[in-house]
Every structure is written in C-alpha cells, then in structure tokens.
Image (cartoon, rainbow, N blue to C red):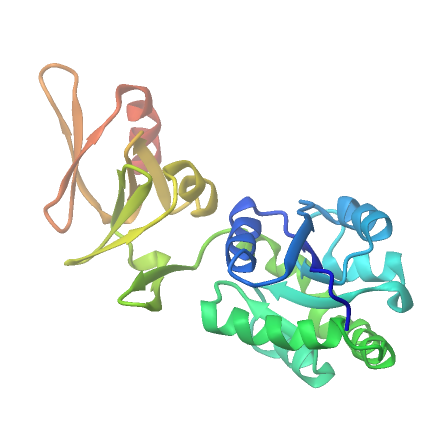
Length: 266
C-alpha cells in the first residue's frame, strides 16, 4: 500500500452534491481531492489527465451520463468507482448484483463512510480484475440503469428529501411537507407543520434545487410552497403578504409580486 494520499475525483453536475461529498472527504485522513468536474465530458478529461485512485461518479448527468463516462474511458482504465444516484427500486438492484459501491441521494454520513471505506480498500489493492467485472455487470444492465435515465432526469433534478441533522443524527424531511423556508444568516430554517429544522444551506442553493412548479422564492429571505398559500393580502401601501393555511404570514417583495399572482392563478 502506498504512503501517498488517496487521490479522489468528485463528479456531479449539482454543486450541492459535489460540496456534500467534499465536506465528508475532508473528514477522512490521507485523502486528496484532485478535481470536482461538473459534467461528464470534464470528468473524462479529468480521469485521463489526473489518474485518480477513486471516483465518485454521478449517474444522472445531462449530455453525458456517468455510465457513458465509463464507456468512454473504458472499463479497463477506470479507477475504483462509487456511483452516486437518485435512482430507486429496480435500478439499484443492478448496482447490488454487481456488488459495486453506490450512494443514493440524499445519503447520510454513515452510509457514505461505509461506501468510502470499501472503495478505499479496493483502490489500494492490486486486484483490478474484480473492478472490471463489476463495471461490466453494470454496463450490461441498460434497462435497469441506462434507459431509465431519461425518465428520471426531470424528477431527479429536484430535491425530494432534505437532510436535517439533530443531536448527531441525520433525518430526512420530505420536500413536499415543507411549508416555507426562511433565511437565517448562513443557515436556512425549514418550517414543517409545527416543527422547525435548521440546515446549513443558502437560499439560492435551495431555490435552485426545489421544484419550481411547487416552490417559489417570494422574498430574498423566504421560499414558500405554493399550495400551502391560503390568502394573498394586498396592503394599502403596495406591500403584499401571503397567509399560509397554517396561519403564518410572509412578506412578498414587490419585484416578485406579479409573478406570484400569475403562479397562484395558474
């Protein structure tokens, strides 16, 4: 086993996804993050030029998927790989049958640690034949992984669950249960019925990752689930507020007022 750090490449088209893995890797000893490409084409170039020991590879990426990255590089030349996927049910069976390491978004710290330790052991071993067999097994399952990609692209673009940490444990809140979100410095506060959850995410990042058909940013410090709105109040001075079914009232910025009215009429 080499004394040098484990060289890791993180490939994901979503900045939040890359940052999540980077943050977890920073906790690991003897790890060097050599690159964080945001698309498949850049991933191919990085793998060929940087020669990482381990790749975290997003499966669902526009233009060139993670599986197409493997086909382009060639199974024989691929480093140890941890797939990162938003797939569920039968698609995961292909990964399990091939005994490859994979993470399902959103994943918790323990699941990451389990996959990373397995992949580290494999990356630092001299047996590459097992990796080839595993990757070939995945590539032979187009119905389970490859052909389903288009169908899952739209839904996997948006958050379905949001990870929240409490007392050392990570739990998941369904995005559809979030009534509204308020900015709180570097944090965001999720309001779910009578509960509040504080997460370290920017409002911009959340706005980008929440389904715009269901959520709207109505103020620089507020995002609301549209079907949670009960009443739109028009103030005498031109100020607007929304009243939610829970009774909560949120200010609407003037620049977003017309768009909100249009969305509510739709």
